[in-house]
Length: 408
Ligand SMILES: CC(C)(COP(=O)(O)OP(=O)(O)OC[C@H]1O[C@@H](n2cnc3c(N)ncnc32)[C@H](O)[C@@H]1OP(=O)(O)O)[C@@H](O)C(=O)NCCC(=O)NCCS
Image (cartoon, rainbow, N blue to C red):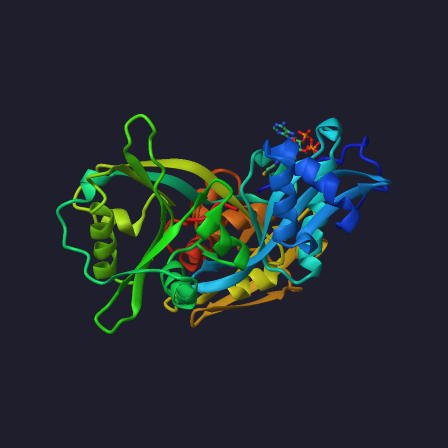
């Protein structure tokens, strides 16, 4: 049976340190923490805090000092074709002189409790150290790979027909196209304004958008691209911050558009999963797919998380789940989940008997995303249960390899 192994918080952390929103006067100190944690400049860190909403920054306050901070990003994440409310966490930083005292752990636990109190369903992040985030209930839940394709490998297909340059006024139809594309894959973000901004611009580069239209003039595919040039060779690398398409023809038009850069460009690079529909449209598998990160997920609110995602309408049945959550007491206990018509109905179960599946909140995250089937999760100690219940839950969460384009 999976055991919850809560370690006591380090005694060196001041018990009175408080977690809460940053105030205006905290800006220099928050910018200092971000600069030192991510090796940036004070100027860029200050802009990052100000331009993307200082109301989303949380700090750990210990008297007059701020030993640690993080940023919240409210958005959604697609599972089973539906957008589940997601709070992304970024910019987790502890002042260099305050590290190793349990500040980050304490801050993450408080952050997860805040998410639950706000009614958020799931939390997500990219981890520099998994151990820290596992302590507050996050687990590996999906992939982000870096895909590199020699541009010469794109040659030989059809010609791009209806290409347009994207302008700001096109963003509503770009976003609609992205949602149609992204909702078909478990793990893709339902992007907030913060993430869309990063698609178009990063501190070191700008990305130009191009779209392709179908016969009716509807935007059926697009990409955002920068073209850094090697100063020695003069050759370019095509860097995509985003690519999406809603039909095979649109995908092939985008490939043809990129192939036209072959006289000047050597390689094409994009973020994706171990499987990417763009690669499946290519005739040969002569490219490199390298794992960058497993992103992590936290089921913050068991009932909301299970009821918000979509399911195959072919799956029908009931599973009793025994869940242990060391940070959020309300998640701990027996839950009964009924799955029918592509939806879940979830309630706390007061009856007795043996649970079908027993797991920690981390085990639930790895199964919820579809990264591990319940049988696979059981084999690495993330859950246990009887075979019928494990198989039913496996059918419930099945939906392909979870991945996402974006890093946040
Ligand atoms: C990572 C960071 C936030 C940790 O902050 P901290 O306050 O020192 O962390 P804590 O003392 O709360 O440690 C909690 C757990 O995190 C893990 N951890 C902390 N520092 C670590 C390190 N340098 N390497 C590996 N694991 C580490 C440990 O498992 C630790 O628990 P343990 O000591 O009981 O084993 C801090 O080192 C930092 O700001 N680093 C630079 C920026 C960064 O990596 N941010 C995270 C981006 S996702």
